[in-house]
Length: 113
Image: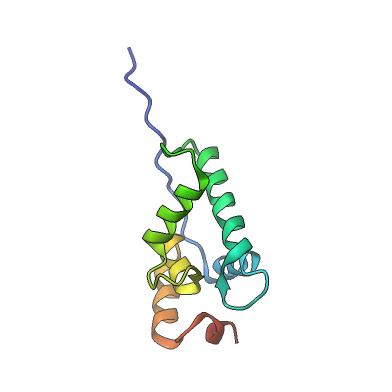
């Protein structure tokens, strides 16, 4: 007799710098160096959709509550926006890309230039 099923653990491959930038450009639609406003809503909705598709579902049903909890956890400077460095902490990104980003770039807009 099998025990209760557990949600599958997500084993995501690390993203390359190129893949990370593609994702960044997709969500930072206006190119201002931040994922904010409607961009942030779109990001969160796609993230929740991917989580549900993978069998990971949180207990809360209210999307607004989930989004607040998410921002509290990942918006390190509490400015209501996701910066490139914050997104790099959310997505499984190659470590060498993160090191390069942290050592040589001051901001998302500087990196994009």
